[in-house]
Image (tube, rainbow, N blue to C red; front, side, top):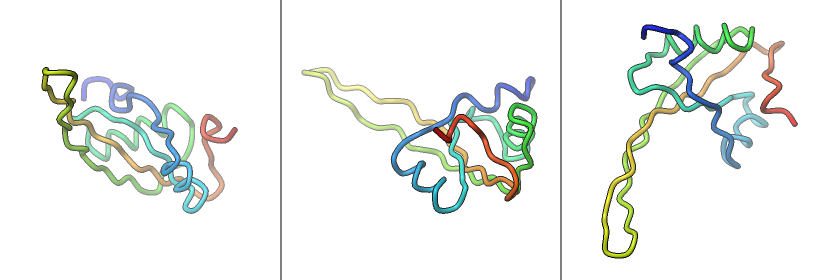
Length: 95
């Protein structure tokens, strides 16, 4: 990655990710497909000034979508599950 801030695109907030935060203090982010775990960890630590303990990644497969007679595919994308040190938190998810 040329710029470490391009590794993380945006937070991913859903019911399931909110439940993961409540149970395991785990945050979910949409990431660049080329970003590795090390780049994601460095980007989160730099952006939010927190200590990251672990990063897990998953690639969501593309989905077939139909609109009338037209068929197409949504692109695949990568998401990262980030666990923080017990003393740290990110404010955008709380509230």
